[in-house]
Length: 559
Ligand code: ADP
Image (tube, rainbow, N blue to C red; front, side, top):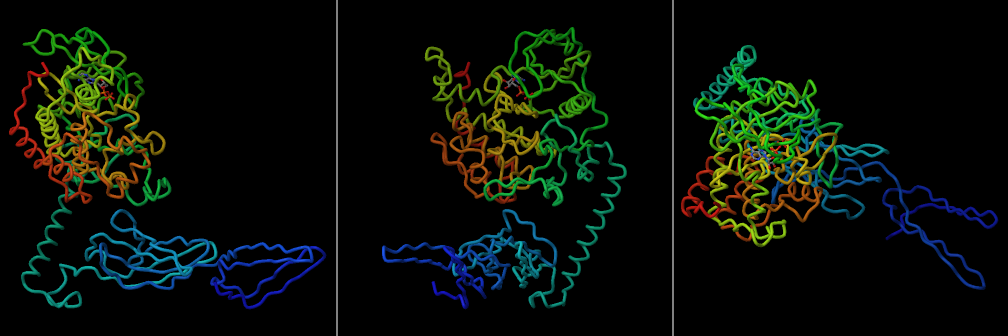
């Protein structure tokens, strides 16, 4: 390295010498200063590297170019390493999977990188300002970036042309008219839509997250409940390179208005419920097998599963009733049947149809190659599931999801642990609460009470808490993977932090050994990074149905 130091002095007093350097610049950084001392007996030397602190300097900010992604390239220096922020048209650019700052290289005492944009449109056009700051100062530079012509701007002449054809005028007028009508409709819905199921469509942007124990099943109207940028502010954790916003209990976003005002929840008398044995432990209390008498005139008694609510605070009771109304409104052959509640005394009880073979995850493990390892002795070892049985299971879950999507419900926690298996391999989506106690390693705690099933979540849910029908489709892909691995935990070989890194960087689960190509292709279609590129839920269902039909299931194998 060429020494650039222009002026120095050595001050010696007794045994101590001091070297004073003057007129240093950032270019002198990392220069080696060697001190040698010698006398008749010998010589010694010692070396230090110069560490010069200086404010940021942006030496280059150039026009955007495209290779794999779009890139606005920059070079800058500063010590300590400057923090970078971007403005577009003077407004902060919120970074995420589609727009992010990447530093590729540190050479010639400078950092070189890009603002990387994935498929930008005309909305991303404009002046980009790079702000670099550290505790010694700040620097900024601006460059104009132009990615795509605005489709609503004038003819072939490009963005500068102002001429509009008649048809374009019609389009613009049409869009304005539709937007205005939409706005009026929304005002009307907000005013009158209060409790009506259809009123929610316009009004569900009013989302409450005040409840702590409710279901993760969610009604969405706009297909999204992304937190606002203010919600992503101070409460964020940095995991690896990924900034994850922490929102108080995002699992439980829900709109109060999602329930029909006229929902009639059936009340069952306590003396009509006779408990038989414990089935399992849920997040809110024990689950029992019971006999239920006089449920309907034509039935004397039937077997049911009852879920108890152990701690019934005022809030928990409210949630319990809302949950019951919600469940009453969900009726489909692949959603577990909800019969009603019993609230005469504590504990509060919810009564469901009994599904003989319990949860699907345990069922898959019990019917897989590791079932001996899982504790079933070799003598009573159940037969392994066949491919056609797996398809039959998958097809039924997809049918349940088609129904939920048609009701504009987003499940947010679709996984085999939340599905139930009945007689003749009948499978239903059976849980809209969290089975966390038993499966706590499937969830990732991000702060306070918030537990997230990250192994089932797509990048946009992990990074922005965006949960939609499309994110449910991603989870359905993971459910397919669980089915074809006989209930393995997705990414079982990785820690939670590693899973987050993996998913946000675009890695997907590998094809299970027993999985046919068509089914793995389907999984890949569920795991497209862009939510709108993922398969539609109806498409997935009909593909699975066709595959299942092509290889009929011999149900009697399972008895
Ligand atoms: P929670 O939703 O409160 O967490 P779960 O639904 O996970 O509770 O129930 C805990 C366990 O109870 C399940 O793993 C399953 O084995 C059993 N279980 C729950 N519901 C039923 C049902 N309808 N039929 C049979 N077993 C059930």
